[in-house]
Length: 154
Image 1 (cartoon, helix red, strand yellow):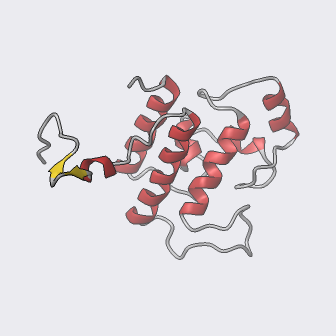
Image 2 (image 1 turned 30 degrees about the vertical axis):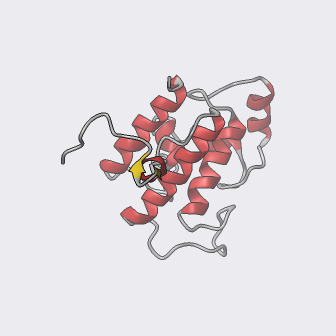
């Protein structure tokens, strides 16, 4: 399976951010979208409310002109961020009185957010979720249906 370029680049950036402790849902340069968009914060002007799917005037202009940011449309970018924030435990759109997790930066919380984002990115590409390992555990007649081509060692 060929991985589309924009997905491959997003996965590399998210992987590195997660393992280098640069994934933070409360920082627009270090959240899922911030990392996908090269740690820039200019994307936050696509909406008036962080975590909202409603495009701002600027967002509508970019969307209507067909502009893409690292391969993603403004609406796709807002959806990626919404998925990440909600999976990390935030109520969206973000505001001071909405639900917020006690500690949004635990590895477990960030991993869950990352998994949800990867699933969404794969859905955008119409490909199976690259993090779905359930096929490894399918069996038929008490034998594995699928075999690993290589042994993984840590």
